[in-house]
Length: 350
Image (cartoon, rainbow, N blue to C red):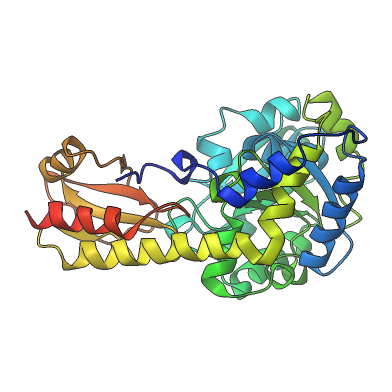
């Protein structure tokens, strides 16, 4: 019963097999091999325009380098107050940019409120240089609390960003889950709605280690190749990242895995709602489920082998917590089974 994180899951066998298939032989290094170029073209097909792709080791590196390529002197990037980049990446964006700051913006259940964003950016007047220079806006899709921005949501954020002359970045560590949840094309969810650059994650969705910065707007990211080299994120044997993405995109495996994870999350949500000892904190939209459980009941589940975490109360939560209750996060993955979900239901009913 492993629901601590989709990072805990293993690797899809098709991706492992493709790595083995490419293990022998000789190929041009540093991302300039035949397979690498084929994967760059595949990204362009998926996003329905020519894009620039930069492989990196982690989602944190993708986010931080995205901020670095948008950086200004005294730079300030605007994100949701609970964004991974703001609370879980140990100041990586500041490190990669030599001092840029994240400015948190409020919004219900993981999604930035456009009006709050506009007010936050407006605070930094050009006549008040010591306060810093706005440099970018970043949103997370799907969010840290399992919600998803609609296309109209993204367009509303992009309109504010454009009005202030700022590029819009999307943290897509769980981008596949968001696409699977909405059935919107990657192009429509990103550049057609105003997104300039995306951190594209595959690691949480069945890959060994496959993340990338994808530049959607040719006016952004001119120095990314140099920034990535300086950050030590340029892979010599990049073909092994490409081999993962080759299998990932074949026959829409990436979306099939995401749909399975989302489906298991939906099944778990129903299980929790039907159980006498738990209830949903809010409705899940992707592959994360947040449940309100009595701490004693949560401890019973964990003692029985269930892996999940207690979670803080997010901005916009309008439910009620009893004296001994807390919000707990359960994350489903491509490897989650119905048996695992049903065992949680059995324990909650007991």
